[in-house]
Image (cartoon, rainbow, N blue to C red):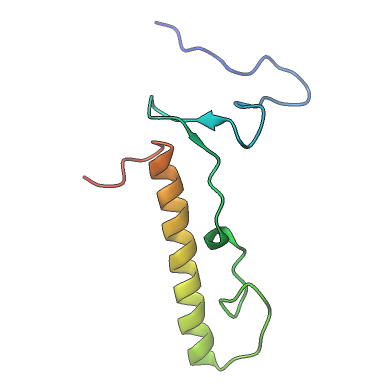
Length: 88
């Protein structure tokens, strides 16, 4: 069996779905719309979505918490797309 190729060599690239509201899945899972959440915000050095001054300990704890939130959001998105199983 030959694998199907999505791309056709077009110079502008290849899209899997046409808009962010269309649903998609990976590995035959249930299709879902593109995830959108405040938990996907950029993490700054202070661990906040806005630049603020803080002590080293407070910044470290805040940054760790912000990274954990972002990592869990990315994990949940991959699980919902069936990109990863999420558990054994």
